[in-house]
Length: 336
Image (cartoon, rainbow, N blue to C red; front, side, top):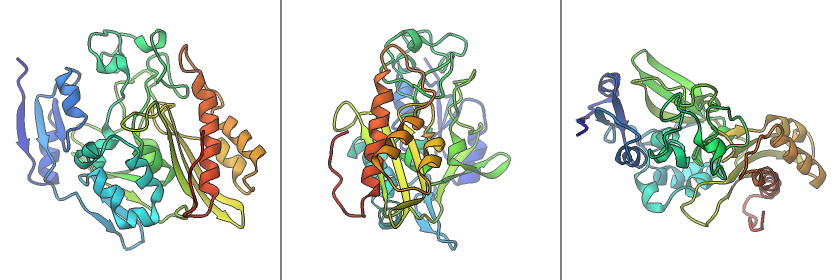
């Protein structure tokens, strides 16, 4: 029988102290960790309960940025008036994830740390998974890889990051605040998740004992023109085959600035900077959007079952840009 202890953290410092021991795992909502524990994927020797820490607020900072506590539920964050007013893209992305019941339990910090839904990772009967057993191989490469990565993968892993929220946070230039044994630090969200390389067992840059305390959103000029588009196999409670976060700063029909980030295609949210550079300073014409969409998937390396994602991603990019380019409050219907 697997032995496990449980302790409730009194405050952040106490949580860091308890979590610094090898084998310790923080637990907030537990929506991902408990599933992985029951499957035998995660085997912590100590659970450190951080669910009652005073990190569940959403507050405006003096510089106009917004701080969302790591223990705030996905539901609270998505429905907070300031998030809905200033960062609609984030609200859309969160509400596109999971089910209402899970969003009520899942936390902002936990969402950032959720692990891939790769079949070969989540089912321990498959022995070849470098993410679960480093050095064992990647069964997905020669297996059923329809949901897997087409960008940024390696010979060690072709899994994708499952978070909708993280895709929007990258588009909004968010920062992740951490507290750990070496003190506090801030990590730009674009640097928080890793590409697999030769060490796919590490999903993020977080260190043992480090606790996510908050996510900071800077003042944004993308509030009026943004859209999160998620393409999936069914309308609810399904992970993205492809998603796109499009955030635009428009001036007289010209793109003054923008962020374009793809989900469901890589080990981390994939920022399409080449496509952004093509669009910046220009009007959103159909021809330019099509060229930018092609640039967004440049260098894609599909596998046996997921080549369809290349065209799907391009169509999704164009559609997300079209919707984001409309005035705030206009209709958002239409097919990909």
